[in-house]
Image (cartoon, rainbow, N blue to C red; front, side, top):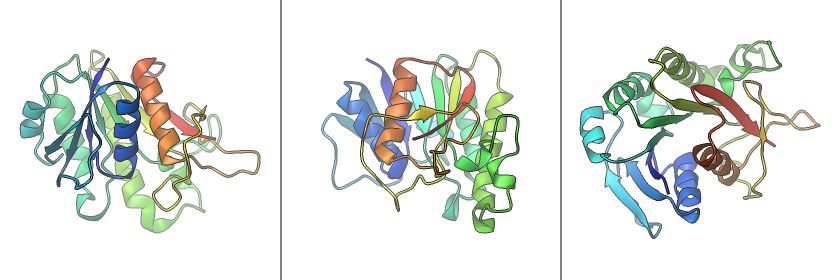
Length: 213
């Protein structure tokens, strides 16, 4: 089984990824700024922060995949992009990196514009979306020896709309996934299914992909 570290492992996306990975028998390390009071059996919990990449890397010796789920919002706005870059630089070359980004960087149609650039995109969310896009751009510029994947969740992804685990999702490549009614949504649990599927059966080496129903 794979040894997976999830940075932001107690947050919304991170906690679902941790739970799914453990359920499938992987060895899981959850990294967060504070340790949770409720813990999942079989998970190793580490108190740590993305803001201290050297110390974080020393705690993650032996992991196969490191996934960053930390959003660029609140006190982390402007901090996530440079620190993900520092983390990627500091990790051993054989460690695969995964990043959970946002819907804003996905395209509205094949060859079309970005979601973040559409008039309907909420202005207050743009700084977070643009920083997430910057992380993708940084990954795309890394040396070819660094394997990574980047996930664009559906537009309706978030703790405010948790949903349930169905085990189903669609992979839209670089295009936002929408249903027949034009809605874009995925539950936290099914985002985690997509992430662990990618770890178990890699299809997106050095690529991004959007997920939704």
